[in-house]
Image (cartoon, rainbow, N blue to C red):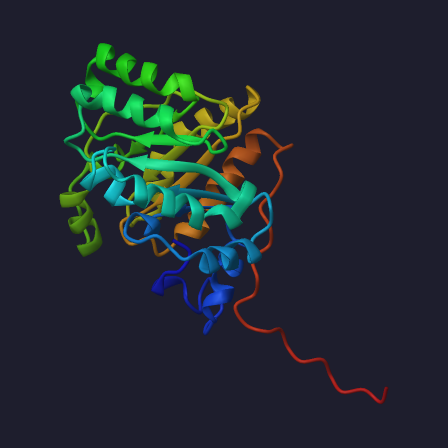
Length: 280
């Protein structure tokens, strides 16, 4: 997502035409989760506008359509997959990874189907898989089974870390809603490839969010020292300050690794003061 009502006029200029919203978001953060592609495949022309609004190093992590991952359970949705792959072609190198978010019922018995699906995918993309079945996190044999399916195509395993969120009961409407919807799974902080991806869910209290991500500051800094290129997505239940928090996380990692490049300066939400009139 790159638009949010809570950001409008505060973090992003308002009003903004649709063809400018991603450009303004990309001045805050250099990666985005393509969650909307799960619900509907965009037109190729729409995707071309995404490419126009971002630099070649911007990272899209795009979720495969639900017709492929949930309705088809990785079988029998070839037409939908081909349409999706054709639509995202204008992004070129900006497509950092294609994201297979699998339903909670997708368990160890389904891993052979995942392995077959991954082997049939085009090799010009990288892939990352998010699983939510508890067995993958609690049984080392089942975790190894999944890793063995990902390894032949160098696919990454995306952890969705909700451990900080579930530490204490919710205190806001947004937190209560997330409490019933988000997966409650053990922490996983192990990279399989040179491009690990992490999804982190904090709290609506910024201090609690920052406290909960401290382990990830260490992990991400370690990955960078190893020569990996991680992508970190920071969420809160209301996401009101998500871009600010993402930049704060980046700054905390930079404090440990000063050679890490800073994020760009955000585009001002309003024009600066007018220049005084002159004779020339």
